[in-house]
Amino acid sequence: MDRTETLAALRRGALAGARELRLPDGLSEFPREIFGLADTLEVLDLGRGGFTDLPDDLGRLNHLRVLFASGNRFERLPPVLGDCPTLSQLGFRGCGIREVPAEALPRDLRWLTLTDNAIETLPDALGERPLLQKLMLAGNRIARLPASLAAADNLELIRLSCNRLDTLPPWLARLPRLAWISYAGNPAEPITEPNPSTPVPWAALEIGDLLGEGASGRVYRTVWHDPFGPQAVALKLFKGAMTSDGLPEREMEACLAAGTHAALTGALGRLVDHPDGAQGLLLRLLPAQWRVLAGPPSLASCSRDVYDPALRLNTEKALKIASAVAEAVAHLHGRGLIHGDVYAHNTLWDAETGAAVLSDFGAASALAAGAEGAALRRVEVRAVGILMNELVDRCHVAPYGLRPLAEACLQANPEERPGLEEVIAGIEQIAV
Image: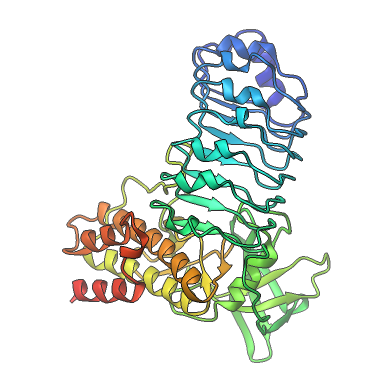
């Protein structure tokens, strides 16, 4: 049903017992009939409307877990959100929010998305939400993180790109469960030299089928008529808008800075002369049978990927994937980059051979030299460990030694985690 049909069904009482209600695109007044679902409603989508506030009695929705309200016109995060006893996920992206009152943060907050707003400061109460696991803050005006976040022991993913942070607080990389971080586009990110790239004119490209689409752009099968003859490539055309990870320009710069590696989807050139001014990168085209290893996190899994329940791996394939990902990340670290999004949903693989590559540089950031960069590299070691554990979970017979190696990467004290060179050597030993 579209929004109009759903709203009509709600008003005539036909949605009794519903657990999800989606009313995006156009509403500016909260339908009071929603409260008739108070005993069952868990997910509510009011995105892309004209809301400037929410009703004072929203807390009556005492089973509500997830509220999407992105694309509305809130100047501040509604304080009434804190009255909802089971609310754990908030999506308020691109609302023009300037203020985040402490009372707006639900007690059981687990996943907070405030991407692309105008927020300058965050309340100390943010670090007092013990279940906080995923924090999306890219595209704001934040110059300082609340010191209370140093106690956010369950925080696994944080997106800070395109803010005003002069420094990253030292406690951030010491968080025991943090595995995914991005901070490109802040003054805190080291300045790097522009990377030379091959300019590829739009007129030299023959665009084919759409291969896939993500938050930052679309990927097409393409024939590049270069001076040495036609070659099949992939073209990623960027949408140009702020994503949950940051700006597409930063993704392009990181992809070019990464250089080439057998376990990366490396950039071959940068698009020029697009008739609409779109930006794009030419990438290596993988064989048609390659697929993503898993789907992205769900509402329930929050920060963990969702695998096909039928997926089963043998020892050889699991080790090949683990080795490819670890080697790709080590290569990036050697090039002064942190990937920021080492996940199975960003890993492409061949089910026949187990060959794999790491893709998607949307969350990549430049690494500082010295102790700060070393600390951030250890954060990413945890992400590699999580992925290795997931591989073991899907093996018919677990590769002897891979689970302990993965667990070593997950140690709560980041300084006790092995370096990636040690991880790679450990995988090679297991594979012998």
